[in-house]
Image (cartoon, rainbow, N blue to C red; front, side, top):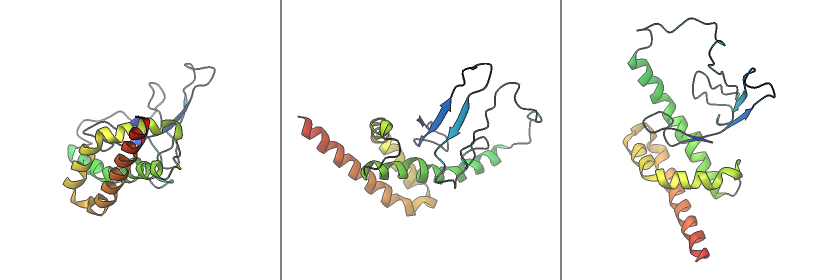
Length: 161
């Protein structure tokens, strides 16, 4: 599990990968599969395909052209990032919040870490949701999921006392 960094279009989302290191590693690159694809709908990054394939940008493995200054403008990057953020909310935040509350978490071994992460980042996520007018349809359901998660965690902690 990798939590998206603050200030990025992946901010506060939980992203899952399977990484297999062959016996010949590091001479042979690892095999990586991306699991947070929204059921095969979302391509979060030019190197993360919606089929789960990951293009590793390892030195000496890319034969394409080098980066050319001025061809990727900050406006293009901002536009791309703005398009990714709603997908982060849907597939890397909302779907995980929902699955932890239905006790059908796809990644049960990470549930404790995910719950802790989301509770710690709750106010940031809520603030960013409320500031993005495109996400108004998501706000209420995410707020409800957070409230249920908080209530459940309080009940669990209360039962331990």
